[in-house]
Length: 236
Image (cartoon, rainbow, N blue to C red; front, side):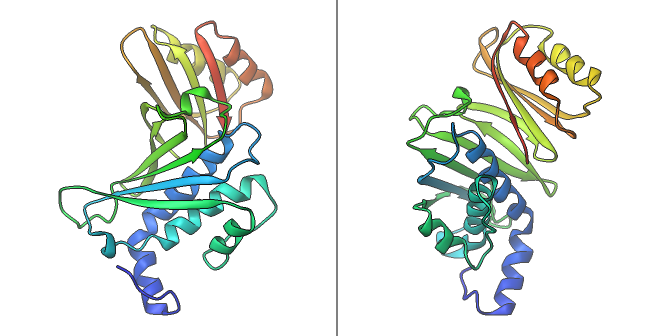
């Protein structure tokens, strides 16, 4: 549904329909920018919306604003909202392009997924890079809760509540228990844990949702687990 944002009735309709995806959009932006090495060199971002609706029946301006908010606020003192999002992005040289991926199925649900890609940067977590060299994160809304569904080329399934630890590891028995025990010893509560892998006994990415930030000592212990090749803590 496209309409003028100076119409309060229109704003209310868009907010009601897209409310579950607003939090997802901001958190995907926050995740993506924290995966950038250095964080300050983000200039080119592509957002893909997968939906069964026709392009002119999906107003994405609010979602774009929230993604912009997520990309900018963690690395600056600027407060971003619907009114100033496009202007703030332009002032910082941030170019955001959008594409719609049209799916078959019922148009009752406005969106199936949102994907955020950052190009021309290096990542502090190499597994977040796509086959074409961009940082890529993708998410969905399930039962009103935002979920991370893809990191780079790895499928995961972790709630975007609290914060996340991502680990790239060699897929082998006992890895979930080892990391879980380290966090448990630090009294860090694990809310979700998901492993995405290319094939059995090959590389895998473990996504761990935590309710509290782990200590530096706990993160070091995770990094010292022999099968873990890299890890990153992402604050939401």
